[in-house]
Length: 240
Picture 1: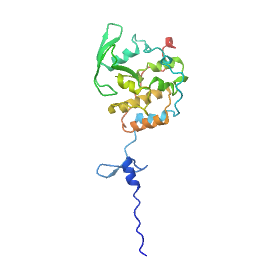
Picture 2: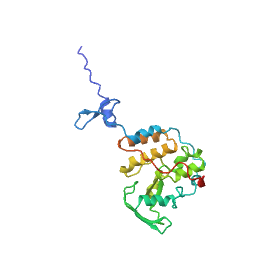
Picture 3: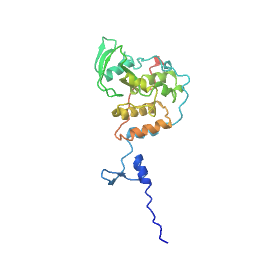
Picture 4: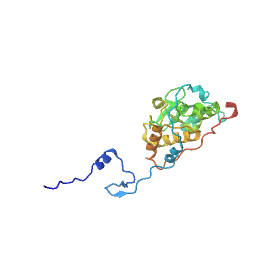
């Protein structure tokens, strides 16, 4: 009887090639096929994801914007409300009306969410000041248990605020990193890093899907640092 030929078992390689996966511990392929050391998974922001607790999303029951205080308070006592503070920070050529801090015009040179150039005129709806970690998302991941003072601090913390295209902000809603990312790919790493920083600062948790999405985005930007600063997590006594 003629001996049967044994074919090499090569089924795994095509599957990995299609999925873009590399076996654990294997060297990453360099251009041209030569094997080289694997690229580090991520930097400071990536590693910070591990500091976040992972739990399921709590019910939205009881959420209302008013639970985070009246919109745009002057928690840092500089005489200007938070919204105008952020507009002055983010807009070029910001024109302020008199001594009352109100920004009446300016230009967002590159909208973080869309990459477009936006002109701001007070009273128009083209631009929002967005909470990077949405208030509703925070409510469902720990903020429901906070006292009013901490929620006011959170809602007015510059670390969690950015001037953006209004339509893009509406599409985001209260989405987290697992359900919404900016169309502007250049901003995805800074955006997710900001979410990690805010959730770490305030002790908010993430869902498993959200954690995985954060890791996926941040693994592609090993130089991404973790933003810091902003206001204290407690507002002045008059807001407590």
